[in-house]
Amino acid sequence: MNLAAMASTTPEPTLDINQHLKYWKRCLRSPLPHVYLSNEGNRLALAYFIVNAIAILTPDNGTQGGSQAREPLISPQERKGLRQWVLSHQHAAGGFCGSSTLVFPLQHQQDWDFDTNTPTPEHAGLANIAATVFALQLLALLADDGEQGAEAAFRGVDRVATLRWLRSLQRDDGSFGEVRRYLPGQGWFIGGGYDMRYCYIATAIRWMLRGDVHEGEPGWVEDIDTDGLPRYILNSQVCGVHDQARHTLF
Image 1 (tube, helix red, strand yellow):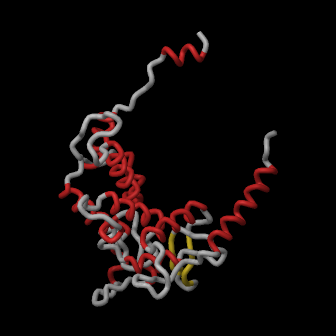
Image 2 (cartoon, helix red, strand yellow):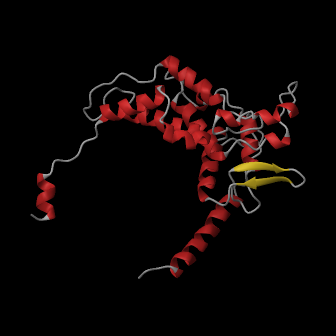
Image 3 (spheres, one colour):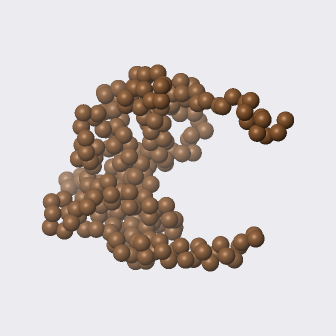
């Protein structure tokens, strides 16, 4: 039998939505399997994929493409609780930490200014760019169905601090790093390597929290280098073309 005949006689596979929802429900409400322990620093990423998968499999209108209506797995009360959990990962110096264990390390308690709630320089490098975009997307997914717009979705986010922190992650060449680190005796540096995904994430965070606000308008915050970023991307594209030419197989 040829491939065309086999394709015509083989039933098309279907997605077992109920089985998937059962799995995601278990991930949402039960302790995750021990194999996830290595991802302790990526809790917000795991939470995003869990909540987003549930949102995709249970559309707001209850039915889609003839599928049977399903009760939402995340109740309004649970949404509020999850939003508070996400916001608890917000760092005082801007951005979000990937895990609650990174928000306030015990070794820095003696240096924290509790009167002004100000972090020490050494403590201000725990938020990272990936956790921040996952946090913002989670807050948007968990927003109250009766409220629309960015203001409702990102209520509780320190928008100014996060945008200024984002700006501090951009290098002189226009690229973005992942974290801000403080090295005693050396000062601040941008860590995380040169990964084009950080540039994509940075633009997503900027779009969600800043939008098209111009200087002088309400809500304006110092912007990133919007000329340097595309220039860095275009320069990387040229390098990529040369690298591809050197390694072509044909």
